[in-house]
Length: 364
Image 1 (cartoon, rainbow, N blue to C red):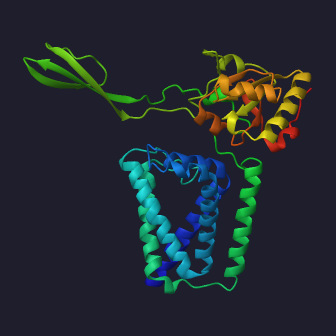
Image 2: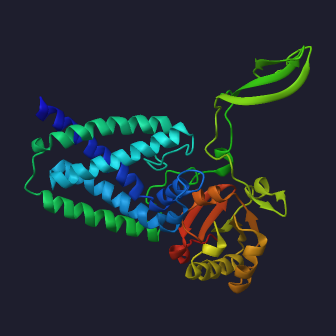
Image 3: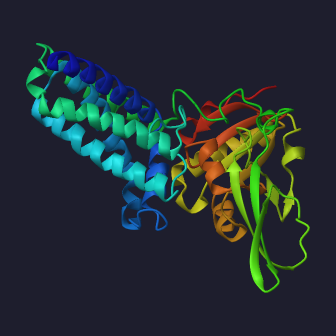
């Protein structure tokens, strides 16, 4: 019976760790953004770790993937089960903390591929913890394959190489709503009949010298008394379109609809111009000038303000208007800083890391 339990736990845990690791291997920069969210003062208050978020993210995704392989092939059983146990205890605490205090709404366990609520993520970690405990106390039943060391070495080389590639280019598989071929306007649409958010309104009145609370779903209650306060609680979340926070603003005016109607638009994207790669800025500036000469409309998109943008526009001769967009949204659109997009009537037709900027394909 113990052998059967260990076999089931071994397969389930190993495969899940590999899948989870591979998804995050595909987008280590996105995982680093999630770690920055956890490190922020409002969550774990470990802000001193924020500068190292990317390095930590890369280490964790490689380690997670390789651990899954090590478990399946039985390589270094004691080290493997101890590592699995320590990792799952930490992440179980983290997901419980996040869920109980409603700190992070998406754990990032499976990147952008599979979205889990905090409580779903905590439940998943509890199941994993139980299975890993079986492996921990019955590790003698984890048999080792003859090729275990070689398989682990290959997993390490593959994981490191894959991370290096996607970091220096872009994710091979794009799970985000801003992938190539996606139309931004369509992504912002709410389908007819989509469920709407349901709120409970708790109205507080003073009636005959005593406080009285009346709950409604929005209607102002008819009460013979003095209104004191109202509290609103979200009872049921409504439909949220895949793209719900995309804007292109300039000098306080929203130009989103207008720009998304244009044909042949090159967009220079920089989430934070002060942190942009300098070689990357030189590369996109060269391509931007070529685009103008070939009849493209060229604009910028950034979460930086006018004062932050000005010296970089001057230094790199970026004679374009930069439209403002929320930082989280710009991070979601493209992982490179800077980067290039091509839009055709709101559809993303090209998306390039700054290292691939000169691969931009111009259309006649």
